Picture 1 (cartoon, one colour):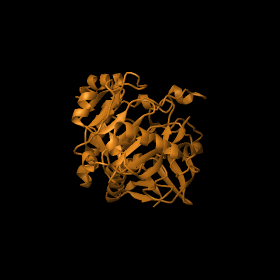
Picture 2 (cartoon, rainbow, N blue to C red):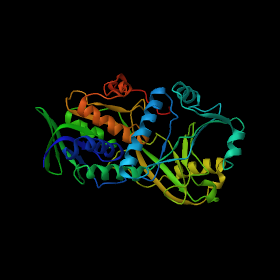
Picture 3 (cartoon, one colour):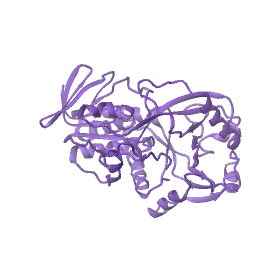
Picture 4 (cartoon, rainbow, N blue to C red):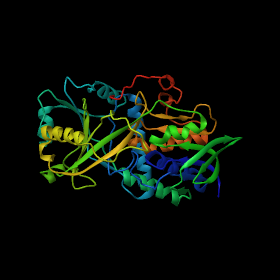
Length: 387
């Protein structure tokens, strides 16, 4: 079979979500194509965990986060797989923090999301794992937790196959073009056609979009995480310790024990620009040292031996907002770019891409994520990655 109603290029977090939601709607009339093996670790969608939260810096993102929980719940019900684990979540900041809590507090309050504002003493009373200066304050939101990244991707793809979709891997794309009322894709030396095409290629987005003459001002950055053997394992179980974000520069974030018998701490760095095909997979010792220094100061009982250090990629837009839209200058090609914080929304974005490609519209306002917004047209846009 070479003719479909929809083709999805890229089967990481967002692409796997898209083939799932398309398959619920059009069954076997959807094809998913991955250039590497399914579940590969070259991009930004694997590992055990990502933070999912309702705490966000604009009301629009908070509303999207609420919808994201519903999308994940649909997948859980239909697949029988748990993919979200609620642990509660802390956003921590001091008066000198670059990011701060004001926008998060205001955004949640404006759309009726309950949260608590607590001081450092209360944080350390509830979670004595923390060592904090007196001037730190925190927002606690009980619905936050872990989106189980690799498990969720597998569930999306497995359900898509059960619904009749065809998924192929190890098939790099060499051509994309609109032909009349269809889109033709050549991948793995075979030609396929569809009524609509979705590009969900992460760090390889511009390479694919170049086939239709489009290039976004994207930075692909190398990020790092570390799994640390805790000195007090029971204290960092998900039932006793929440996910958290340190709202400052450098910005760190972390998880209770999950996936590995270790605590995961990562650096939201957004500094080391790389190339998706020539990136290193070797962890940076300086990044590991910075992560360990933060952990030693603020979470000393987590700062045991390094069990595992990993790298991954962000694909950043200049304003760090998503792209979810029809590709400019095309009729039947759509794309999503996650800007380094999309996994918690992956199933929802997959649904939105399904709706856009099949109906031309969605039930959410996607204007902030337009592919032709002003900053994406600038030759040298100002990058604002700390939001």
